[in-house]
Image: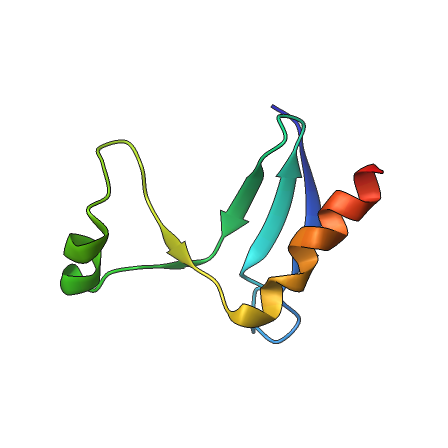
Length: 71
């Protein structure tokens, strides 16, 4: 898999996380904040081998930016 960084959150300090990446497999990688609230994790019912991260709304516009770059 090859990845390309699309955007880092400019409002997140000190390390610029969350970050969005586009893959060469027509998918996204999302670097974000670990979800540790046990009630939330239980409600999500995440299967073995999967995980979830949280990103802020301000990162959503960058998803279409990644799509536009491929056209």
